[in-house]
Image 1 (cartoon, protein in one colour):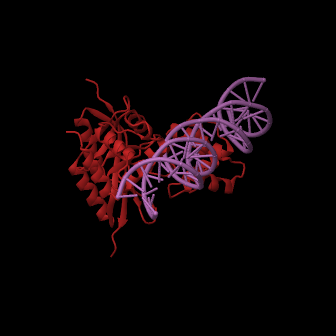
Image 2 (cartoon, rainbow over the protein chains, first blue to last red):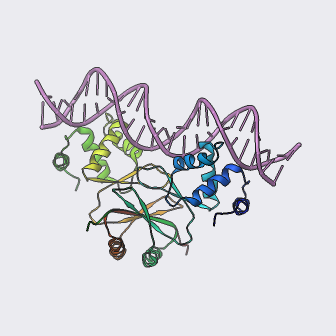
Image 3 (cartoon, rainbow over the protein chains, first blue to last red):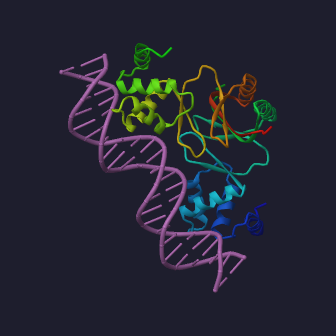
Length: 139
Length: 139
DNA sequence: CTTTCTGCAAACCGTTTGCACCGTT
DNA sequence: AACGGTGCAAACGGTTTGCAGAAAG
């Protein structure tokens, strides 16, 4: 159920990084996070487990993990960056403008259309991200 | 061809704002800009016409114009905010990862699919924005 | 004459970095 | 041991803000 320490160690080593206490804690926290926390939230949650973690290390680790492809950095308007474990299936994000909740959205059909559109313009997609701000329909 | 001073004055008044020299200059600069400039670029271009404009005013004016719906603020990853005159037709943006160019992308079909998908989840779209990072296919 | 706007400089806030020490390999 | 990683505090860069004077209505 919970990720083994050895899995975390291996994942970090595979990424060419040393398996330090701080990195393993941060990675495990992010894996347990169902939401899309920002650096400060990760700092608080990580610190609750291991109080030797500094904010600087959170940022440095997040950069390293992103570069290694283990996590994804998400940028929303007027907000600090949020992070998620790299998703297996491509998905976009819907933000509930009232609650602030972030919901994951997948649509193969949209992805296919988008790729076609871009290719027709002579480009190939490197990455893409859609942010939809929406409000619950009452009733 | 060029927007009349009276048009600018009227647009600002309609937005409930005073038609100051600085705002009219900034607005006309943005209207003439085919690219999607950020605050600093707008500051430089505006200052070339009217050297009484300060960076603070550029930011304050951009916020006011955005709130009034006259312009749109665009957020790309790891970049300062860029601005465009509010587009009549909904469009997304493709960034050429090599040149940094921003290209406007429209697709009614994608928009329709997206709206359907969101509605099926019990939401209505407030706004949406897609950023595609892509590379030119050589050939 | 009132109210809004402006320039200036200082404050802000998320993020990055230099440094000297510490832990992993 | 060697090297990468860490905490701390200071720096950074885009953006915002308090203030006193200037301009629009």
